[in-house]
Picture 1: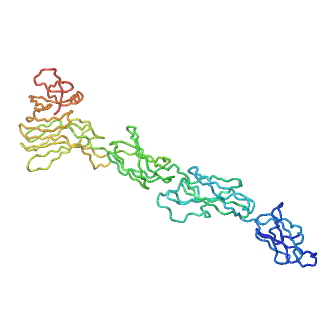
Picture 2: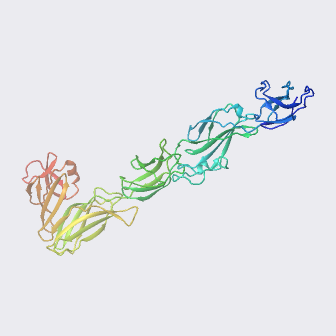
Picture 3: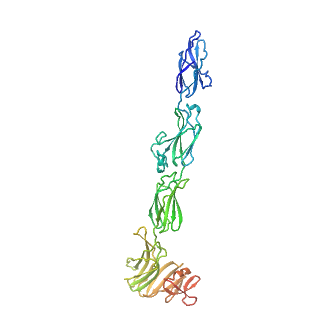
Length: 525
C-alpha cells in the first residue's frame, strides 16, 4: 500500500515497499493508478509509469482541493503484477479560484444605485470552499462627475465640474478610494450597489472567494442616472433699469446630470403676477438681461436649473425694484403774450409718471438768423399740482420764440440721473401787442387740429380754428374742438371758461350763431 508522504495543491509524493515475490525476475519499474473522489473509478488507461524501479515518485498535474487515492503495480520481464491496496484518501491543498465571473449586466436603476448581474462560477474552478463574492467599486472621472472622495460624509459638499475631463490617473480598484462589499450568499448572482453619487461613472469589479483568496477580477463601467440639480448659487442683480435687469449666477454645486438650461421665475409683487423665462446654452457662470418689466415695481426672482429629466431646486429669493421711467410729455394748455418782454406759459402735469415728478424744464429760444442758443428754466415739481405755469421775462419784443416743456423724474437707483420725458408740443409766438401763436398738436381728442390764435397782452385768446377741415372764425372769448368724446369733455372742465359749446353726436362744436342747445364747458387751448 503506497503512503502519501507529502502533497501540495497540484502534486503528491508517494512511497511504497517493494514486492518480495517477484518470481525470480527483477522489477523493472512501477505503474501508478490514481482515483479522483471517494467513489471514483481507477484511471487505468492513464496509469503513470515510473522511469525505474525506485519506490518513491512525485505525481504532478493534480487538481487543487480534490480527493485522491493511489495504488501501485510492479512490472518485470514477465508482466504486470497485481495492484497494491489503495492508499489512504488525501485532499490536495486549496488554491485561489481560477473562475473569472461573466458579468451579464451593469445598469443604473436610480440616480444613486447600480444593479450588477453575473453568471455563477464553475465548481471545478473554485479550488476551495466557496465563501461568496467580493465586489469593489470606485468613482471614475468624467466630464460631469465630481472629484472622488474617500468619505461619503462629504458627498453633499462635492463640486461638479462641467469642464474638460480630469487628466490625472483614474482611481484604482485596489486604491484607498475603492469601497468593498462582501456577498456571503453563494447562490446569489446579482447585487444592487446603493448610496452612490448621482450621475457618476463607476468602475466595478466582482470576483469569487475561497479560504485561499480571491479569484480573477471581472470589471465593468456603469453610471448612475441623472438626479435633481441643486439650486444655482451666487444669484445677484448686477444692474437694474426701468424696464430691465441684468442677473448673474453660477451653476449648481451638484448638477446631478447634464444641465440643459435655466428657468428664471419672476414675481410681480404689486400685481401678484408670475412670469417664467427659459434659457438654453448654459455656462458655468451665467449673465442674462431680462426686459419688458414694469417701471418702479418690486419683483422677486428665483432661478432653477433643469436637466433632461428633472427641474432643479430653486435658488435663494432675490428681491429688487426696477427704476422709474420717463414720464409722458407735459400738455401745453395756454401761452399768452403777457407783456412786451414776457410770455406766460401754462401746462398740465403729464398723464403718466412713476413715483413722482421732480422737475419741469421750460425751454425757449428765439427763432432768428442769429441762431441763439436755447434757454432752459428748471422748476421743481410740486406734488399734487395739476396746472403749472411760468412767466418768462427779459424777452425781446417783435421776436419769434419757440417754447416747449419737458418733465423729469429723478432715478431712485442713481440720484444723479433724471429720466426726462419727450418734449411737449412746440409753440411759436411772436412777442408783440397783437401776437400770433402757432402750435401743431397731433392726436388731440382723436383728431389733428391746427390752432392759429391772435391775442393782445393780458387778454384771453381769440382762437381761429379748423374743424374737420372747415375754417371756423370765432369772435370774443370762444373756443372750438373736434371729435371730442363726452369723457374727454368731462376731463377738460378744469381750465378757464372760454365759451359755450353744443354737443352733437358725441362731439362738441362752437355754436357761433347762438341757435341749438347750449352747453357751457371749460376748454384749455
